[in-house]
Image (cartoon, rainbow, N blue to C red; front, side, top):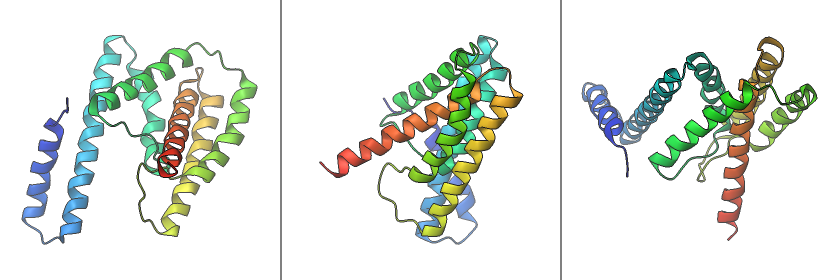
Length: 191
């Protein structure tokens, strides 16, 4: 079952934007794709926010969503094959981050090690794409640097300024899913 209402809204908005301007076919495709991505993430965010708000976890939901919002454009990573699986993975990422993060069960030494290990991992693997995309080297280097810097900032903020470990777990899950996608790409390309 595919959820398509956001695609319809995105295409209507794209038609309105493109209608009064002259864009090449490639630019029109990028505009449509960008709007579909924005609407897709927006509806998933609103859906998760409503669900977690019902359990009085609005603040925690927003906190756990910050790493997704900041890291995904640069690290990229896992993409589900269906909308329902995407919604499930989004919910699971946020739920694990919130529930386990509020327990504070991860030792501080592990968090400090993550501040060292995850940015290096980000530099090595970013950007993780689901398919081969021709990108220029400057854009790849920018993605690697931004991934590492944002990871460091998020982990330091979580370690020193928050009482729970929600951001740490959210960042960790994003990296685990990116590594999973990288392994999946490797297996698919070498099969």
